[in-house]
Length: 416
Image 1 (spheres, one colour):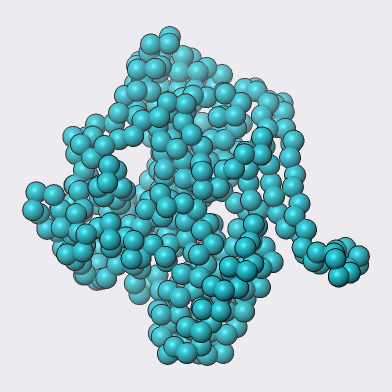
Image 2: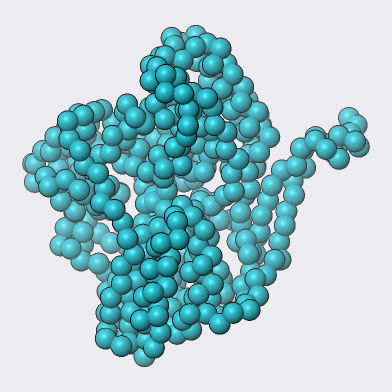
């Protein structure tokens, strides 16, 4: 996502590490041991709901692999990615600048799984069209290709892993062949082709002049996209309904500016669960006293003080690519019933994290807070469900149809 996913990891992983260390294809035993110990420490310290026994077992196997293996940096990266991904949380990941620079060239397209088929939903390649069904990768059925590599993908659910699959380019060769429906083949040569994703920006237009305004918000990173959305809201101030499209929005920032501009009522915040270690716990320590305590905060309510920019009917379009801050944005509109949500259930991953940067360009990110809905029901790996559920099909994409937006417009007009 999409979102967050590896595209966002590339953005977040920018650092000022030593260029010589970054360019090395090997990693010393000393560095392997040091980073491995840091992974264990950070996970054991911060990760909520940790199954310590299972993680210890996974960690032993990880240690046996990295200590007995060669100094190959890519192999170490993949092993570390696999260990961290075993926690099944998309905000808990291992990343290496060197791996991204040498093996992370963009694929030039995105595909999701619909109706048991892997369908291209975005493409910046002239040879690959939206709606194409990817049947195989280098002759291997796409589903099997995914299942063999899923262990490296940090994701909060199986569906979330599928959403991230084609956003994790290090799992693919530099050159590979896609087998498509209609007996077509497309060669993806990332080493000799440059397929950068076009810059994204907030878009807006009238769907029904003077009555229904539409705003497409691609992400929350920076303030520009939200400011542009606010400008469109000024144009649509007199509209009866505004449809805000946050499908595929990876979050990547603070959504509060736009959230306040659209919220016309008080709303509850997430319930948060985190772990506390050391400190006052150790002062009272005895054989029966735990060294770790779980802390829960709830019942926080945001009360409005300013007049929102738009008080008319609001419809949010959501999907599996809405993740992280996008879900933080959408949740209050769902629970307060300020907006009607249409589309697919969101990714189901939002967390505050603890991040560690290593001198060689590697980075470890660990979820440190487990968020649940204000009523305490589970969110991670579950997501925010729409009020009206609609699943696009491969045929919809191939024909250029958008059944989610069509239904939203139908609802907006029929309830005037």
